[in-house]
Amino acid sequence: MEQRTPPPGTRRPGGRTARTRAAVRDAVLTGLTEHGYPGLTVEYVAERSGVHKTTLYRRWGGVEGLVADALDLAGEDGWAPPDTGTLEGDLRALAREVRDSFADPAAAAAPTAFVAAAFQSERAADALRAFYAERFARCEAVVERAVARGEAPAGTDAGAVVRAVSAPLFLRLFVTREPVDAALADQAAAAAVAAVRAGAFTTEADTGTAAGTASPAAASPAAGR
Image 1 (cartoon, rainbow, N blue to C red):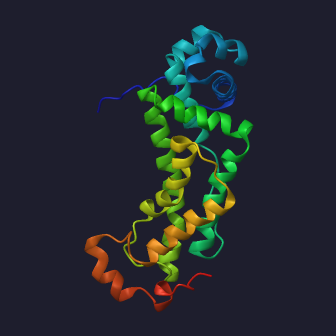
Image 2 (image 1 turned 180 degrees about the vertical axis):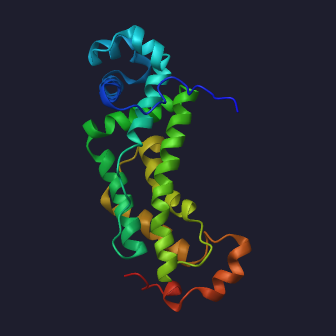
Image 3 (image 1 turned 45 degrees about the horizontal axis):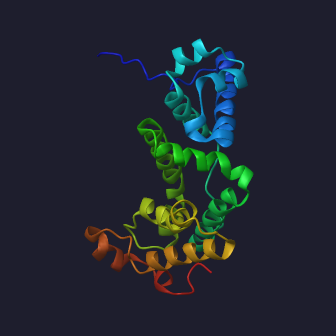
């Protein structure tokens, strides 16, 4: 079978190379925060990271590869979704985490710049899409636990539920540029929970099964509280 060489910046090495990769990632984050994607240059990353620009071009290919790898590296953390014991509690915690991530302008600068870069670079868009796909995949455990507890109908689309929680928050953050507070985060979570209980996220093929297997608690407005 033909062995393909991965794109620049996609390897996951260890030791000194890992430290180099982390230094480059930090420089990219700082550059995005200070200058945005249009102002980020290989020369800036080289000066900030201490890695020669020839090495940067050879291993990452340019600014697009640097941004993509910074997102790739961010996805290698040990983050796990909350486990409060109820679907409502878990989704509320997720929504508040999104809100908290963007509440501090300094902390929000880098992730906001990543989103902006995705509108200007197809490679950055692919990397951002992969980052969130992996994040949402981790969050699906929240819904799977709820189904097992009888809080959600069998056949509930876990990925759709966790996206529904963050969607109204990201709309305000990145489209309408409206403020997002804890009350709005709680509202987004409550709306998602209500939709889950109503079977809005249950696939059509599973509707009959879900209706017959969901516990009485799953249909009760007080379930999970």
